[in-house]
Amino acid sequence: MTSDLTRMDVVELGDLIAAKTVSPVEVTDAFLGRIETVNERLNAFVTMTADAARASARAAETEIMAGRHRGALHGIPLGHKDLYATAGVRTTGGSRVLADNVPTEDSTVVRRLADAGTVTLGKLNTHEFAYGPTNEHSMFGPTRNPWNTDRITGGSSGGSGAAVAAGLIPIATGSDTGGSIRMPAACCGLTGLKPTYGRVSRAGILPLCWSMDHAGPLTRSAMDAAIFLGAVAGHDPRDAACADRPVPDYRAALTGDIRGLKVGVLRRYFFDQAQGQVVTLVDAAIAELSALGAEVVEVDLPHIEHAAAGAMAIYAAEATAYHDDTLNDRADLFTDQVRAFLDIGDQILAKDYLHAQRYRTLLGQSMATALSDVDVLVSPGIAITATPIGDEMVDINGTEDAIFGAILRNTEPFDLTGLPAVVVPCGIAPDGMPVSLQIAGRAFDEATVLNVAHAYQQATDWHRQRPDI
Amino acid sequence: MSNRSPITAETIMAVARENAGHPLAPERAASYVAALEPILGMMDGIRALPLKDVEPAPVFRPIEVTRHDK
Image (cartoon, each protein chain N blue to C red):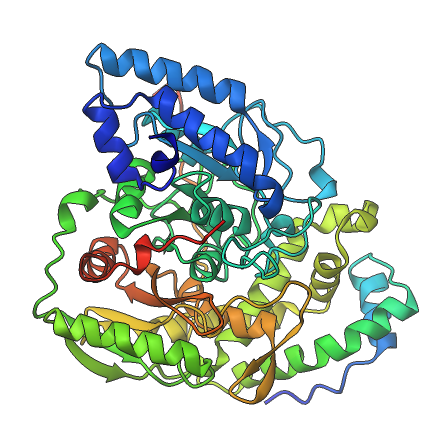
């Protein structure tokens, strides 16, 4: 029974807990046992809170047995990206700069998940200060992909990706500034949701770039992501960007019916520089959406080719501003790659930053125009499969391309525009690594985006594939 | 379009030291030249876009407050 529990998703575990078939204590022990045997090979968890987890699980068990069931997340184990403040638990951002940082207060998302009854097992590795897409550069060392431990997990929520994919936890928190939820989800064969900018509070999460940071989950299914979003979304006065808008019942919105929905395929830019093995599987996934009753059309986004430049100008400027004091006093504590990015931020002129922010408006208008004609936009989640740890270049159809640029290309446009986007696994490439489909939609319409993902997952079983580790 | 001159290690060191307050070793500055030049070149592409009537995305929000005794 114990080994089976670690292969289940949140819905399956939650149903068993609600029915009192298993207790949160059994579930927690099963995942802690799995971490004990597997984590050393992945370097996903960097701080464990096993004693506190067992205490939380016992409390949840007592409440549930007394008839006080809080909902679908009650008694569910999870892990938090080590960017999220956790009261009394070390929060490093993967950096020696914060090696001894112990917050006194939880981040809003951590608090809301705890209120929903979750059981925190520990903290998860991250690319240092979330400033990179591979999870190779962290004070704890690189995180390894459970599908092939010589490969990257993608980042910066790489510990979250590895842990959920390997069955160390069924769900994890992440953050996404250029794609840092969706890239590790894509590399590790998971569902990764970046909600609309402002939908989920970032209060208590170490910032990378204030105007582009988003908080969200890495999960095994769209339904699990809907459950997570329902628990954490909503106004928070501690985050100035957090929107005061009603939060729908996401779980109820996932009907799986997408008949008549109009799907726009982003062929130019998003497919043009994607590996052939990725394009083949994503095209098959789009054909599946058509078979499910969606109308599929091609859509073009004017000005999309400048997305990388716009994103780089913005996060280089904002990240260097945030780390300015440390860069003055203790620059040697950063990893070489992150220090180089921060140093480069010194060279960005104020007018470059503002031109990039004007570009954001322009790109937002392009996407709004497209989404006034279609309901969702689809593309490959990322243009490549996970690359070997240590590599800097990747072959894309006979051309060598920088991995950092290639992996960010398809995700960062939706950080620039703040629109909701989810990736779902849609196949295994000939190199043995997962491939994903990205689905993006209108601002604050996560329900439609997740429903398309759910419909796809009702018709396929790629999200049920597990790495052999 | 920008008429920016190609960036040099000396420029990087000068900006880091004088404008940003982060002195850089010559060898570190030299290693950044290759990374910076294409980034700045890409940003030149943004300047060529029709941005004349486009405002930057972040909008200033006045902080609202009321007297706590009212």
